Amino acid sequence: MSASTSRGTAGAIPGAELLAALLDGMDAALCAFDADGAVTHWNREAERVLGWSAEEAVGRAGLAGWAVRRADADEVQGRLMAVMEAPGRQVHEFALLRKDGGRVLVRTQSAGVRGADGRPAGVYCAFSEVHAQIDLERAIALSEALFEDASWGVVLVDVDLRPTVVNAYAARALGGGRTTLLGRPLGEVIGEGVEELEGALQHVLAEGAPDASAELWVTLRGGEGARRRCWRSGFLRLASPLTEEPVPLGAGWVFQDVTAAKLAAQEADRLRFRSNQLHRAARSAAECEDPMEAATSSLDFALAGFADHVVVDLAAGERLVRAAATPADAPGPCLPVAGGAIPLRYAPGHPALQAVERTGSVRTSAGAGRTDGEWARQRQWPPDAVHALCTVLRSRGRTVGVVTFLRSAHRAAFERPDAMYAESVAARVAASVDLHLSSPSGGGPGPSGGYPGPSGGHPSPSGD
Image (cartoon, rainbow, N blue to C red):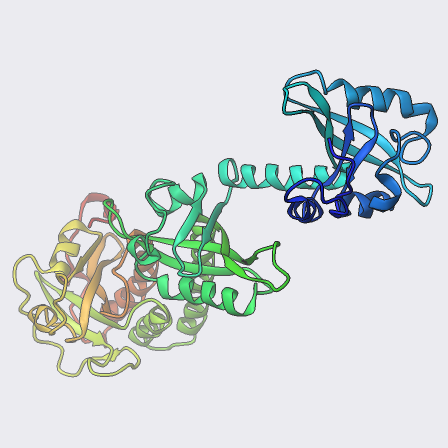
């Protein structure tokens, strides 16, 4: 092996200057020994780690007394030179000496060098500080763990916002495979919410990572239909560590599916609000002298955040009579209907009549795209209604009427928890309506005018 330094001072070997540049540009410290153990190469990283320059190191016979304590020199030199006769590379850890007298633990990878005749000619040894090596191994191990076993989603996207790496959690959340999602626009797997996600990623690429996580509601595309999900997301900008100026490689997106927790929190808030509204309605109704005013007051409180309209139909023999309603053309309180003594001409199968027959609740909605008002007009409801919930009014074992809650197109359809809340409201309203009908000035059918209902007076479970 040549005795020239890594700075290319010797010109006997062709390309020595290129070799010197390559050695000095390495991230790892490198030294080499000839067959007799003399130092032949010493690069800049070795100088940085130990403080000895190439001029001070090259030509020395071994490391004893300057780079290794004399007490350890024989063992270190023996283990390094032993690889000259062995195949492959060997890894060792040694305590080396700095020029300032300090000690540093290094991890070495060494291998033998053979000459043109195939005979052992020396040894090269690449080394780095153990803590730096451990940091690198930790970073690699962390990356592997994130992309395999993490309990949250990890997606790396390039500057065109196309996934380049997707871990197992993210693949399941996005409804695809780890490889099938690569290179595809996010809009192919995410419907509603993709604009917000891409906007966040673009901001990260341009400005850097935000200070706090964000909760994104998205709708996924896929064979199982649209799925509404909430992802708590964090973002990172990825820059190359190999350049002086940061060059963006893309962005990292880390997320967890918190849909169940968000829905549970929303449901808890909804129940808390509705319970508070029922309490306020009871207090307001207690101050009303007129029982019908107490009933409409309770419905006003129930409407808040629940429905857009409400109508009250009272039982008159086998027919229903409209007794109170909110304005059909604008928001407003529930008020008695003028001239409401004429029975309603509800067609057979009308949801209000179904509620009476079932002695429970009935939910119904207009078909998709039917927002022209015809569906509502046929049922004698305000024209903007597209979702309805009819709940029977029961008091003292008989049906005294039906209350119908209506929602317009900007709200979701009624669900079973909504029916349970409506039944709680109806129980309070029914008591007031019964008192109104039983009073001499009630203006409606007397106690015998209601539907008899089932034996025992207990309503059946809510129906759909």
